[in-house]
Amino acid sequence: MKIYLNKVKESWIIDRIRDDWYINKKNISTKYIKQSDIVWILSPWVWNKIPKKNLESKKVLCSYYHFDFKKFDEKDFYKLDQYVDEYHVISGNTYKQLENLTNKKITSIPFWVNQNIFKTLNFKDKIRKKYGFDTDDFLVGTFQRDTESHDLKSPKLIKGPDIFIELARKIMVKNDKLKVVLTGKNRQYIISELEKYNIPFKYFEMVNLNQLNELYNILDLYLVTSRLEGGPQAILEAAITKTPIMSTDVGVAKEILHKKSIFTEETFENAIADTDYAYKMTHNFTIPKGLDKFENMFIKLYES
Image (cartoon, rainbow, N blue to C red; front, side, top):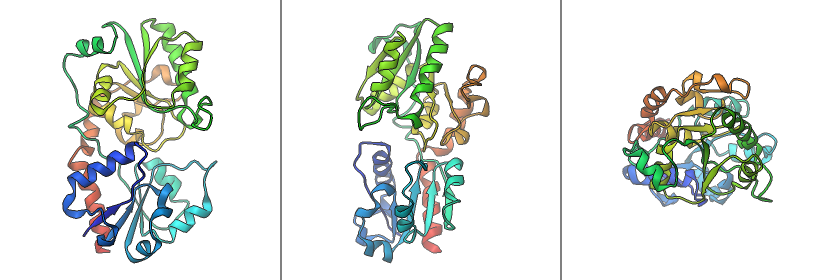
C-alpha cells in the first residue's frame, strides 16, 4: 500500500501535516502519484490539479476541515465527490456538515500534533523577558489570521476577531496587566481594534516553530473565538504545551477541551481553562499515535 498526498504550498498547517506524514510514514508513502494505490486529497481546494486519470484509477480519500456554506461551491464539490471513495474530517462538527452532502463513508480523526516541537518549557520568566514582557503581565494570545486578504482591513468574521476584541475589553476591565500576543499574517483588523481601545499588545508577524512554541509557553490564556473553524491546530498546540486555553464550540474543541473550557460570548466569564484535561486528551494525537490512527484508516480503505 502506497499513499500519495496532494500539496498546496500555502505555508499553512496543511503543509506541515504533509511534511510530518512523509517523514514518519515513509514505508507506506510515495511522492509520485503514479506509484500510489491511494490518493489522499489533503487540500481539496486544489483537487483540480490532480490528473483525472489518477483519480479514476486509484482509491481516493479526501479530507475536509469545515464548510462555509455562504461560499460553498456545490458544483465543484459534486464533481470531486464522484471520484472520492471515502472522506476524512477532523471533528464531529464537520462530520455533521458533510453527512448531509454525501452518502460516502466518513471517518473523523483530529490531526496529530508534533510533541517534539510543541512542548512545555522551563524558565518561562526568562522567555517572557526575551520577548519584552514582564513577569506580572497577563498575556492572552491569538495566533490565527483575522483579516480578509482582499483588502487587508475587513474582519474575517468566521474567525471571530470582533468577539476576541470584546472579550479582551472585558478582561482589561478586571486586569489592567493585560497584554495581547499576536503572530502570523493578516492581523490588521485586530491590531487596529486593539489600538482603538488602548489595549496593549505585541505583534510577532512571522515566527518559526521554535519561537511559536516559546510564545505558547509564556501565555496565561489562549483564546479561540471563531464562529466557524476546521481545527484550529492551535487547540492541540496550546493543549500539549499546557497553555491554558478556552474556545468557542468550533472544530476540534469538543474532542480536546473540557466542556467547561468551551464558551459563548454570554458564558465566557464563567468558563475555566482546564489545562490538565486538555493536555491528557491531546496525548491521543501525538506522534506516532496520531499518525497511526490515519494509517489504520488507509489500511481499511485499501483492503475494501
